[in-house]
Length: 361
Image (tube, rainbow, N blue to C red; front, top):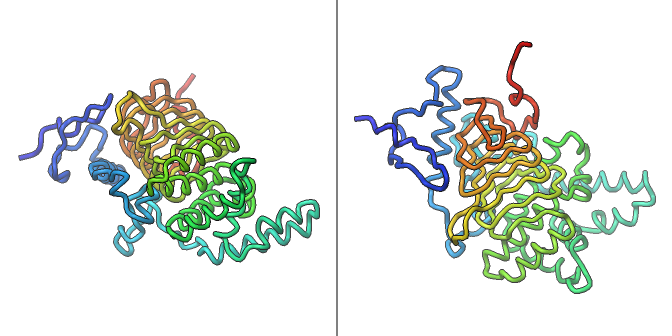
């Protein structure tokens, strides 16, 4: 017997409707059109809801490497030969560089820039060329960025190097983030631009170190690092927040991500995005952003709501309810204006298309 339609009640205001254990027996929701061109979007939406049902690990239960970086997906989760989409999680693309290949390209770019612009030669030499690996260079750059009179750069560099050595997943995520910035930001035409000058990328890498400290119960130092990142980069990400791979924060100024927030793989967001909490309880009170989501400038997602994989939210919108996978939403409060979108918005980075409906004057 088919499950009752109430099994598909979407979580709103923090209250969840009943859901069945086996999704294949569910009555499809109204937005899951049976039309052939929407079949794949409906399947992905079901997968996104099913993924949400997996329990979120507590701080004491979180494992090393990938899970500590905020995603339960792994590249091997998809069957060989299956179609890969950004909204299905992170997987290295055929054109992606390995860490060693990426480091070699970065060194070449830095060397060429130093020769072309002598005023930057000393900076490029100490930041890139003198270091034997990407991990060492990132340790130096982040420590140099965050150091102060009381937070010494040598101490920070040792701390960051220890984190990279203890958890290789942090550097793997860093490489994925570099590839994401280079692919999605048309203003970035060199890898050195990303690692040296883009504060959104730098803020994410600092957060990964703070999160590593948080999961090892070094919470005072994690909070101190978060505070310093907020002062220097104007990006405030709580060290307990979980961020996936291949994430782009473009421009980044004013981005706030709260304690219990989860950001999936391949997410793109712009400046002044807020993933804020609702209520004073100690449980989950911040949003969960699915894989491959695009959040426009100034988007606020408030409360423990889920933004489904592959969705797009227009600039200035305020999201206070769940959004299904592969939809387009805009407004205050945000309203869904399109369902079953097959495009991958976090890759396309189109912040105008789909928000203006066809009309005739």
